[in-house]
Amino acid sequence: MGAEQTWRTVLATVLALGPHPNPPPSSTGEGTPQHDPQSPPLRSGGGLGGGPAHALTLLALLLSTPAFAQHEAPQQTLKRVEQEIQADKSRQKQLDQQSQSLQKELDDLRARVIGLAAEERAQENDLAQLEDTLTKLETEEQDRSAALEGERQQIAGLLAALQRLARIPPEAALARPEGPVDTLRSALLLRDTVPALRARADALAGALTKLAETRETLETQRRRTLAARTALAERQNDLSKLVARREELSRQTEEERVQVAQHATRLAGQATDLRQLMERIEAERRAAAEAAAKREAERLEAERKEAERRDAERREAERKLAAKKEAERREAERKLAEQRAAEQRLAEQRAAEQKAAEEKAAERARAEAEFAAAQRAPDAETVVGGRMPAVGKVTVRYGESDRFGSTSRGITIQARPGGTVVAPQAGTIMFAGPFRGYGQILIVEHSNGYHSLIAGFGRIDTAVGRRVATGEPIGLMPADGSPDLYFELRRHGQPINPQRGFGTPEGKGQG
Image (cartoon, rainbow, N blue to C red; front, side, top):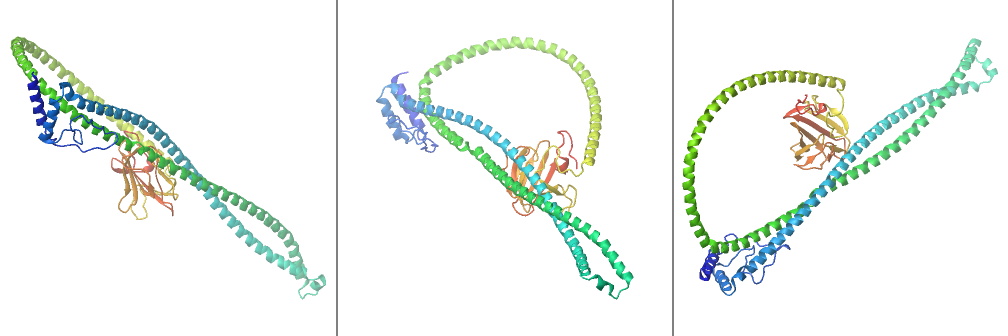
């Protein structure tokens, strides 16, 4: 193609480009490349702009420079943009590796959080036992003090009577108006009373010693209870810090990855605009050669199609003969397949009947085993296949009447103020937050059609869509009063007894 035709092609291409219909927004980030002063005027997103006036200016520059210089500046800019895209890809790879490292640290942190939660639950159990022991010792001290006070009053009355008798001289006793029999009776009474008083005094001394020991044990138990409460508070503080660290790690690299992705998108747009300009110019240069090649290709294609038509007619005749033979063969195979299918259906029917009988027997055996387990441990405050969400006493069980007189579809646990609430089993958070008059509630979706509904939180430490492990802390109870935690377990939308727990994948929940 001649030089005159080349310049006409370039002019037509530039004028055809014209103003960019949708110029991309300008970007002033640190990763945006600076355009070469010798390159054609670029838009703030990387495309040509300015209409016909800018096109004529570009044409003048093209006419005043050699042909190879027409693409030097766009090629340099394109190369620079592609280098920056490559650098962003490398940075993205580094961020992915860093994300994997942080994910490993997050998994380790989650394991530590679960361990701390288990330790905290054990300390809460120990503290509850210490407080129960403390209450019993205080009651025992009060009972012993009351008994000693009554004994002391009785002995004090007897001692006062003896002291009055001891002050009477023997001569005065003989001169008393009572008869000798009464005087003898009084002497005998005094003789029998003194040993009894001594025995009661000894018993009183022993009781006082036991009371002193009980008070000493009570004081020791109070010190242990105080130490246990202090350790529990420290453990809860450590657990809160780990939960905060877990939230920070999950957000640590997300913002930087988003920024790198946005920067790479802007650079890709600029590279596309520059490459499109160069490709259009090159396409115009190749148009004439491609047209000639197309005409030659059409001639060769026509000859090829004629040869293919003759070959197709030959193959069609062969195909029809083969099709006839194939139809006969398929008919024979169809009849044989129908016979085998009938035999297979009969065998499958028999196998299905046998499997149904086996499943029915297994279901009956599983129901009997579950009934026996329920009879052995009807009051066990545990969850089969999972964990109780909080440590405490079950005040309302499944099927009992709650404080409003309605039949409870779950269980109510009287937990400790500020106690940790954990996931009863691994699952995904489906709802977290306040709901009508129920306060802060949490819904967890588990495998095999199970859902947990937990209400009564003082604070929720997870979010919707997050995956939690069995025993992982998900919140705290209110810090004051005697908070109650409501725990309801559903299977395929139907409430079941939470203390019967999570059944096997193919089993059914028990009511």
